[in-house]
Length: 418
Ligand SMILES: Nc1nc2c(c(=O)[nH]1)N[C@H]1C(S)=C(S)[C@@H](COP(=O)(O)OP(=O)(O)OC[C@H]3O[C@@H](n4cnc5c(N)ncnc54)[C@H](O)[C@@H]3O)O[C@H]1N2
Ligand code: MOO
Image (tube, rainbow, N blue to C red; front, side, top):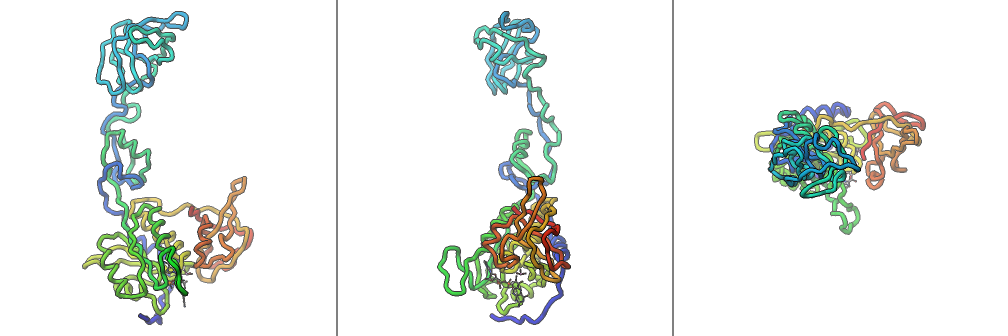
């Protein structure tokens, strides 16, 4: 179906569009999950130890627990002989009494008997099981790991806001915690539009292309902690687009569409969503100029966030990095939602459009002194169709709206994206 493309809304800056997006986004309400399901989630509530760690004085060595006074005279040439009265593997609940002259064989991690005040490692003994020869005088409290020296019951172990990694999960488990309150992963629908799209690997007829945006978006969503939900690709057909969004929107926190947002005669996304209150307009950036943003209505309430991105693959990537990634990280509870930037010196210049800020897919390299240089990733420059070349970029170089030419030797702000 053809659409009227006459109305031309005023352009807004990148900052204005990002501000509009972030005003609409908050962290998803916390849920409680088993520790094993909390990897990469953001902790919503401080975690405190429920018990001392270690929970009891225990041995740091395989050896013998004994009264230090009994072995102070021990040397290799004149060993001390003790009677072995117990054998304590890790996990033993025993607390054998030790009289002067007695020792307990003990393994790493086993509780130290109350009557012992040091551990002698087996390397300093004859490893005897009925009696044992001690060849070296032990130091005070040698090889005892005292109760509560890691954390004590009630101590803060993990702060709210922490993005949980492997060591955090281990710390929680060791501290007696079994569940964690975390912000859940947003479920994000991915919908490509365009009658020209075919699956990767399909044979193409004239005018057809392989859908790369669906995979790009799925992977980008996963990389920033979301759960991608593939909605497939729809042809340039209003009813098909509306039907698929109506069907899936209730289970989603956000939807990302690609294509169909420009001023062309078949721009189906804009045609379907603008009447529902989704904003469409140009953002002063290249690539990524035509953008749509709002909520897809579900019932009477606002449904999932709706990001309508332009179809060109480099535009999809730059739009995701600039607007969607900060929004998804906010939903997942991250406090740091922007990638760090650095300054780099241009080695090969290029042109940038007047009145639009540019994100140039670029290669940033560091010399031996650590100084960063930047050049375009593709000889084709900023073309938003250069999807295969995009893979060789490790950065986006930012060129402000008022700059039309980037020269060798200029300093630019760059964002590393891989
Ligand atoms: N007269 C004008 N034409 C265009 C303007 C303009 O201001 N005036 N803006 C240009 C810019 S900038 C962009 S960006 C594109 C955006 O167009 P759409 O969002 O409507 O995207 P489509 O036309 O559907 O597709 C653009 C391009 O991308 C390819 N594409 C689409 N989907 C996929 C996919 N899933 N995988 C890979 N490639 C995809 C599509 O085949 C087109 O080549 O509009 C310009 N035009
Ligand atoms: O804005 Mo388009 O995204 O320049 O290619």
